Amino acid sequence: MARQPAVIFSHWYHLFEGLQESPKSFYESLEASIKKRGVPDVALSRIDYHEGGIFSAKREYLRADRQRLVFDICAAPFGNGFFVSWWLGETRSFWSMVVTVAMILLGLFLFGYFVKTLGFFLGIVVALFVSFVVLWVFGYLVREGSIRIELSLSEVPLFGPMFDLIFKPLTYYRIDTNLMFQESIRLAVVEVVDEMTKAKGVRSLSDTERKPVLKNLFKR
Image 1 (cartoon, rainbow, N blue to C red):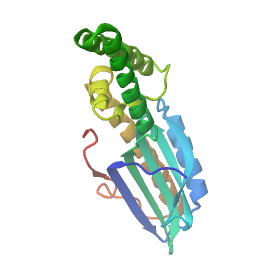
Image 2: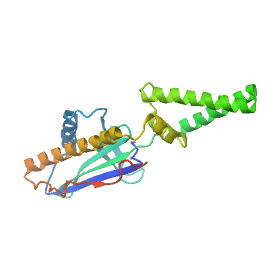
Image 3: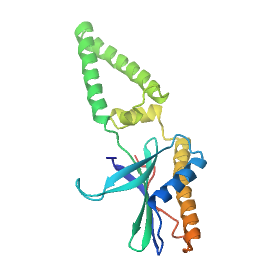
């Protein structure tokens, strides 16, 4: 089962009364709309979320994810209408705890080894230097894509903020890229919704109804 985003940045929903549509058909149209936009590094998948507890029924969502950001889009019949919603959020990696423990053990090993062989003060200096070099090389390989656990590193306590500061600073480029991803998927949803309402003879969305509820997309 897919994991829900740990943090939600924005949300949108609308119930189209008197409209009957197939969720499968909606998702297929939406996938085509997203693909034609050529959004870089986006992965599309179908995921299932439990409606309630672990033994409850599941509902299928279309997920579009790019690095940390994920769009979970829901389309489902409800009464005599058709409900569409999306959630934009940020995921958290399962491996962050594993990476944290591994880094702590590596740090303890380096400090213990160099203190034992070089003495207390010189050992600490050398251990700090070696640790910095190892982390720098590791971070460089992650940034270049040779090691694909970037999200896990960003979530490691203490080291995560330092890794982001050195290798993934919050630049105008990152902000604009995230905003472009959000807007591209939002426009794809709006496009499919407009095509659906037009084909079924249902009232189209007003400008106010098209606006999502936004939170802070870049809060750390």
